[in-house]
Amino acid sequence: MAKASEVTRRERLNHTRVVHTAVALADQGGFDALSMRKLAEQLGVVPMALYKHVADKDELLDAMIDLVFAEVEVPTDVDWKTAMRVRAISMRDALRRHPWAIGRMEAGTPGPANLRHHNTVLACLRRDAAFGFRTAVHAYSLMDSYIYGFALQDKTMTSDLPAEATRRREVVSRRHPAPAEAYPYLIEVAEEFARHGYDYTQEFEFGLDLILAGIERLAASSRRR
Figure (tube, rainbow, N blue to C red):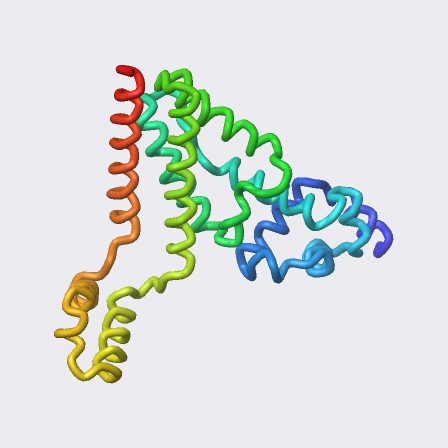
């Protein structure tokens, strides 16, 4: 019976299962803590069995990143501005689910979902928005810089900002004799956040809308020239 069970386990092992399990482990403990040995233990196989499906950890990471890209929505049946807004929010949501992917999305060798994603975004900017090549590239770079940068802030900042704002204000007050006179605007920020908190999603969408409006004006200006 044990041998039959081992055969069944080996037959069930495939590339999809390996990658999905790796993503689940990275979601729990981060990518740096993920090893081929830990992955093999989770799958109930010997480490060498994994190398039939991925060549090494770098190839595994490429496949994991591709899975994250597959989760990101880029609608094709709406105007370009709506499509890029939906895409940005969807990308941030995916990175919040998979924080280990932050800083790794544009590295490595792109897989099929990664390639489709980038091509669809460029099609939206070049074809649907009718942006010139340079304008499209500038717009894409700007949006990704904002999305990935905000995702990093999401990852590193505390989820309980009011409590953290209060703590920092107390520390500054102990270290400086007159913090209100020395740092009045920072004290104002700390007091406001302590009272009302900080809505990360609202802040992200506020900045996103400013960027999209700026891109729209840039495109209109370049067309006139």
